[in-house]
Length: 358
Image 1 (cartoon, rainbow, N blue to C red):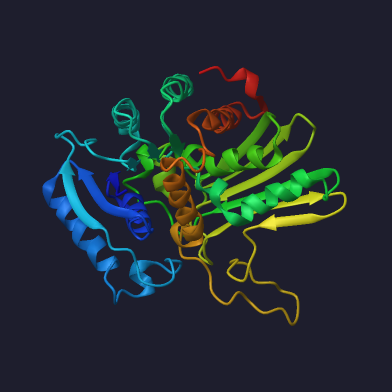
Image 2 (image 1 turned 60 degrees about the vertical axis):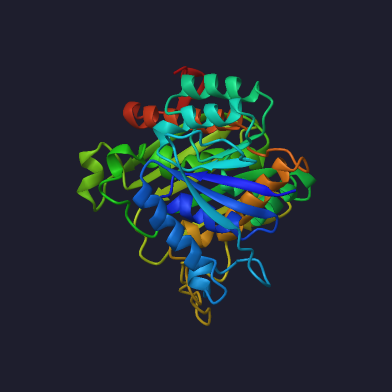
């Protein structure tokens, strides 16, 4: 049985997903879907170069499958056409405001969907869309990629195995290597909804319990473009859970030493971390400790294995061999935390999640 996968939205994330899923065995045709024929042809040419037999790691990816690379047929379709026809699954990586309509079109046509977060811009919209889409009984995954990261999955297993004893505290860092493109800042959703939304999803998932409140703060330390859009370039937050455990979170743009995403969980009997390795962009000042051999340039390089596991899982979902780990409703807690963080900054005090209704 042949598998025909579509990709809507061919910016940086969409092209990455297109390359990754095209390299997976069993994908026979990749359909690039967009509004402009010229951009579709440009994306097709780039993808063909990435799938070429002589493509180096910089093109095919450092974690591309070993052995001969799968090379599916690559076709293009305009969104003005019946773009879902014949698709076995579709990845939606277009602008955020287009996610609901595109996902609805695909799901009502019976086509499984992997959609970039978020599915909605407001809490009420996210809740309504979650109920609508999950009632259709067609597989849907929202791209919270850290749930597919091996390190974070293992960390969750350690927490729930009981071997860590009583969980005392969590430290989590989400530090971007580079500033956001100034043109993206006004529509990015801000540091809470764009950068730290992944912490807000991952940490409750790791803990397996509900957050109760958040106390957030931040500022603009060196880039006026954020202030011009009412955003922050540096932020911190403390999430308190039902058990009393607290998670201490920091977010920052433009950490020159490299991309840094890690979560450390301290228990009474053991401590474990995801995201701390030989590429962690922190140099110890202790004598005799070597600096990192290299650091991650950006989140795509940092999470390439997770992004690949995500699309591999999507193919398994399409084939009926797995279920979604990231349903739309799974994003509601993260959305509430982001809104509560914004409100906490405005009020200068902790905000309970039950105060957030819209």
